[in-house]
Length: 398
Image (tube, rainbow, N blue to C red; front, side, top):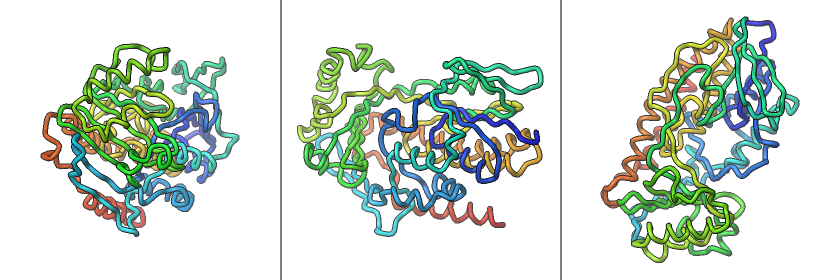
């Protein structure tokens, strides 16, 4: 281990920031690089459920539990499932003391963690464009702004299309055949009362058994967001830029055709959007993504194991990956030993969850009638989260 290792985290998402936070708690210097101009430079999307056995454990390690619960919405754990005729198939309302998987907006989570990282260690406006391995085994990182830096350890926390991943693995994410249109409804209780009523405090899942769905979620500040989802080519609807003149009109027309057989009460989800449509094709890495040990390089979060959003494991694993990697760097005698310890634990945890999440996506968008599709029981999931959290804490204290 260098006396003061030069650690570069690429990506200031929740996982990368959490890694930096825990490293700094241990007195280990780190620099985080991100392409965004600032922590709030763009709309990050919808809400996240942080699980007691992964994401919440990571925040606990980082000393951020109170900060999280100050923002979290336990009532957001509520779930309603419907068919495309508007028939309610099942509902889940969490108990008042249920904190197994509270919701928090993506932007809120990123800001909350960033506020607890030394601002001098954050390099915004640094888009990684290239890497090279130097003769001494360290790595040089090149950024679009013309700067570069050398690092003893490069942590790829840069998501699905990671530019760090090629240093360790040739794998690339592949398209699942399912794409989401990300939309939102502002001041929903006043301006979109029908949508607000259907979504309630938490999530609404509607599917037709023909590969089409609406997945809507309550966010903070009166916002409801939804994913209009379908089996389709990755470039759906084949018009190029959705924000181009005429793009929104073309999208609405295509949606009216795809969802023509849906009940009229559900159609405002397709048309009454604020801020347009953003296409999000769902890509995944192999369930058991592995790579040979690479000195001075490792991956966390979606860079290592991007999977379908079903189950909500992505950000939870990214947070725990970041926390455990940081603890390994602080505890192990060499960076190589820290990388091996982190990757062993990460792969054991992520492989089964990725397989389950990717299978769930295919089942949800399959041709099974909604009434016959058995969704996981949220109450059972929550009990399992709490039991695994207790087991994790017991192992740490042993």
